[in-house]
Amino acid sequence: MGLKKCRGIVVEAPASSANVGPGFDVFAIAVEFPKDMVTIYLKEEGGLKVFVEGLDSRNIPDIVDGNTAGVVAKKLVKDYSLPYNIEIRIVKGVPVGMGLGSSAASAAAVAYGINELFSLNLDRNSLVKYAAEGEVASAGKPHADNVSASLLGGFTLIRSYDPIDVLRFDLPENLGICVASPKISYGQKKTEQFRAVIPKLIELDKLVHNVGHASALVAAILTKDLKLFARSLSDAVVEPARSKLIPGYDSVKKSALMAGALGVTISGAGPSMIAFYDLTKVDGDNIGEEMCSAFSREGYEATYICTKPGQGCRIVKYL
Ligand code: HSE
Image 1 (cartoon, helix red, strand yellow):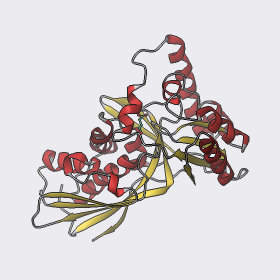
Image 2 (cartoon, rainbow, N blue to C red):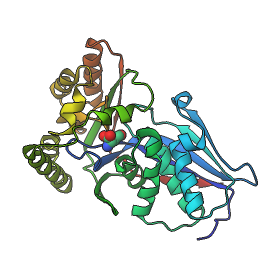
Image 3 (cartoon, rainbow, N blue to C red):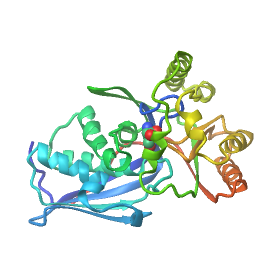
Image 4 (tube, protein in one colour):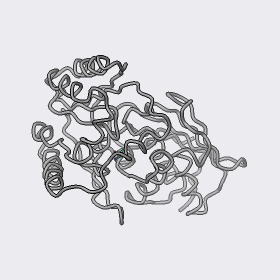
């Protein structure tokens, strides 16, 4: 451990989509765009401070204990007895509440940046564990799927939470990703609300369904088989419960498939929907527009983002 000879560090962290069908709290995908940009400054005084600007920043708490990035920084400062005068400036690029791991991107950037700045030499699993602490501030539980993808990029899989053990794989380069998000206000702690509807106990046949599909999804990624990937997206446990909270769920799915998507599922906790397609063959914008039209037929304005698999956190510069 040793402080780098600089005043600070700028880190970029990508958005992510968690669950990827059957992998509730286990699978996630990092996307190329959008991203958060986080600057961590070392100061002479002032304690630990968080400032938030950029997209949707009005809806993001900037008190240390209420902000995902602040929670991560505070924990690292305490556990490693780091100098307490740290200023974190977050420029949000990842929209809030769009099922793209907005809070996780900032948390991942801070864990990654502090690790670099103070040369803590934290391994991949420890970084994920610290970054996941921040999710308590937004979801009420330290789920680690989004932060894993934001930190590591590609497709991530949490084999175990205790002890934390995260695997990472590259995704097929022709995998197109389109996320459509309806403008619905669920108030604060949306993820917590979407977690409250999940059944606590499940039947054995649903377990069999999800283990089969989740295993096949990983096999599809390893063999770069987009068709197998798409038919492995089905989730018998969480998606049926959450779909009831998403107006137009069935018609959004159908519209995306009609426009050439290979498969569609809920992005993260929802209400956004994520469609996957072969970007060498299909126009992603067409899929996005069709999904938004389906939401608007239900009376909800919607926006979409088309992107592709992306890398994890990276250092933009030292200051
Ligand atoms: N796995 C989490 C959930 C992701 O589905 O609640 C939240 O983005």
